[in-house]
Image 1 (cartoon, rainbow, N blue to C red):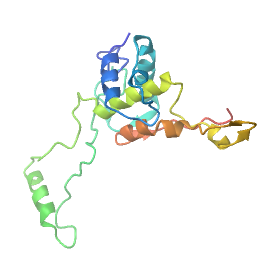
Image 2 (cartoon, rainbow, N blue to C red):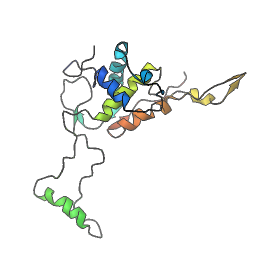
Image 3 (spheres, rainbow, N blue to C red):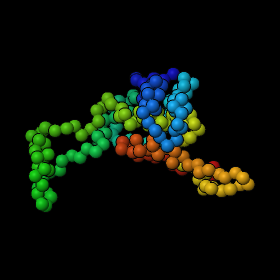
Length: 191
């Protein structure tokens, strides 16, 4: 059973939210058939497993908002992607008047924009990554690299081995999570 809030939270999104997000994405591992790119009731386990993977396989920026929360998000002190704090003017040569105008509100204790994501927010990109990871798991894929790509193009009789590499398949997940943390999962070796 999917729980999206509280101390027993095991997912960032519900099954219906995941399916709605999957309709808006076109990841490299998704097929052309929209029915195949959806999660069924029996696929709730993939969604729960995906939230656990996002929790354990990434070092996220910031810190959890509550010590009792079971998942990594929501977090505080996570910088907004693309946000650049104004630097103190006058240190760069030549002097940049745009930096001075951007910095001036900081002299009076005010800010023109909050530099952090809200403490109650789970970013849309994290929710999209969970939905994509659940679909990837449903299709038998994973997040970590494998060594099957070494046999690319090998011909055995009439059979030609196709390229299989989990990193290529999960690139769409990594690009959504990369702005919020660092992937710490590794490669499978000796498999």
